[in-house]
Image (cartoon, rainbow, N blue to C red; front, side, top):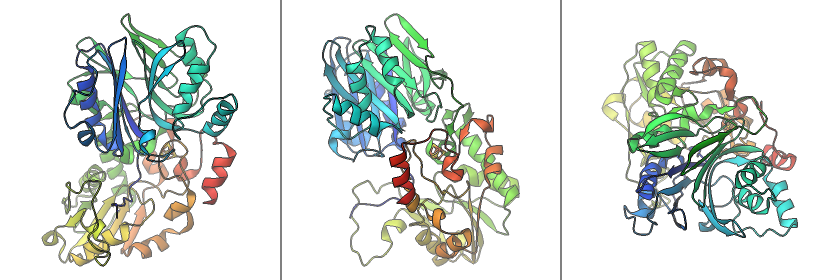
Length: 467
Ligand code: SF4
């Protein structure tokens, strides 16, 4: 049986570079830094300005490329992608970047992080006009829109095509001898601009810039389209402004702690969340322990504010791999226990305050809390660094159906009993928003309060709310 994972999954990570002779190698390294945003598949399209070639595969970046670049075209221009499936299955035909030859326009490749809310209408419309889709991914829609656009100028084709999309998108495109980046006007997903030597870089998170020694210049602004070619960088803001709706869950769980996104640092924001937690939901404990890795910094903040000792009481096994085979069904809950082991000497006889970033489906939490009891914990007090997830996300995160979310149908007391802990408290939405490093009005919080910045297609919404 494949290892199941109860953690929410990010949609994807993207990377692009123009103007460096080692473009493909740097893209490979950039994807390495973005691996946490997608572990299912990886791909790179590299180009020399005349010709582009792709190399794609299922698995981690290291598995797909194996540190070898001979399959990648030498050139100064490249884009890359790491992926989880949120729309489209995890089939090989859905690996990105998509690279196509299109009539009269040469080669075009796209890598997408996000999720469109009007993909069904656009796809039906395009198919009625004769478009044949190669994948089940909504990201392919933009390729068909560009190929069909009647605008004369290429930049106009891009802008006209993007203007028809609704939803979350942070794109990188490779088109002939040009790198293009675009971010939706709400700014759901992060996207930044950097520089190394004279080359420009686009990446989902700044950790990708740091790894290759590139300088961070600025974020790609919500609603901005950037064109980079041999003449330099050209920026447009062609779409109507929208209220910014940065995904608050990037700060809670997805983004890497060393990244700066949405105007703040992820690690420092998580520590501030932890401080708010300690003020809002104090616990009578002997020590504070995070569920690693995403809750580490919130637990540090909690410990600093509460004065309780911080201990890394659970050891994560980093060597499981994605194709881990459960040895026998009789070893119940083995897949949870093999990932995280409590340090018994720390837990024995103690009242433990456990910090976790979220409880989405609640399927692994019960086993995990049980392992702490078995390790000798006298009391377990669970504190969650965000409010309960009660509503689906339409913007690229994989908690898609309301029925999947444990808090959508159970009261907190029922969840506490289900998990078998002595107390359970969630951070309030107000507390979470107060911990944000920029104006709290700039965030999407829809999975907590159903305040959707952009309404999904009715059909999708009905399906996900009823599931
Ligand atoms: S609904 Fe939740 S996960 Fe989705 S974009 Fe908004 S805050 Fe992020």
